[in-house]
Length: 263
Image (cartoon, rainbow, N blue to C red):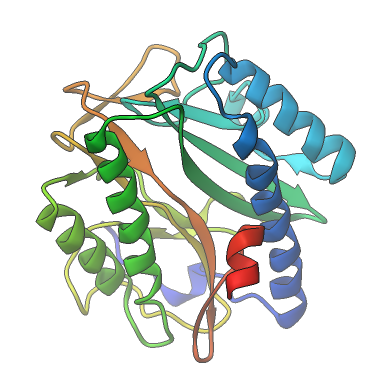
């Protein structure tokens, strides 16, 4: 990977940080809204339609994925062995499925990006554990964030934990800087060596979104040009937050209502 130079990574002003808080809150609100509807019998296309209507008509915001580089829907729905970028459609969710819903909204020109795993019915113990380890991995990465720490510290922390639990980290897809642009520098790898990579500075905003597989880390892209699946058909799980580097550490901009109340 090329080392990122400082000049490529945008430092958000206080006003821009506040705009990012608003966008992040809206993205989290979409997931709070759709969660109770992620049940057996609904199609991923219906989930997309409900989210689209909520973003456009209630939040008066823009669903960033829609028509982004040709993506045809307003959210991503990645079920079971789909790693990321699943296209909502006719698939009917069934009891035992695990599904990642990935939401990015644009409000007043700024992006908020977040995803969560949802359990449909009563998934297997193995599926639940995978989702739990993925959640913990994201948070262990987030908790490394502070000025002067390096992105390699974040990636190493996630990798060490995930691999210690017997799972693998997807390497082809990573977190990213975010702001006025959906995907900007830096790349946020979920593996790596401590004390390497970009040094973090207050005002940076980026996503932390490890994708972990129950089997091997290898993935393949399907013929639709978007959907990424595990090569060995093993389950995959992902969680994502947008994070702001603060003078004293970090602020998570995409906490759901329950987490905001607990904070």
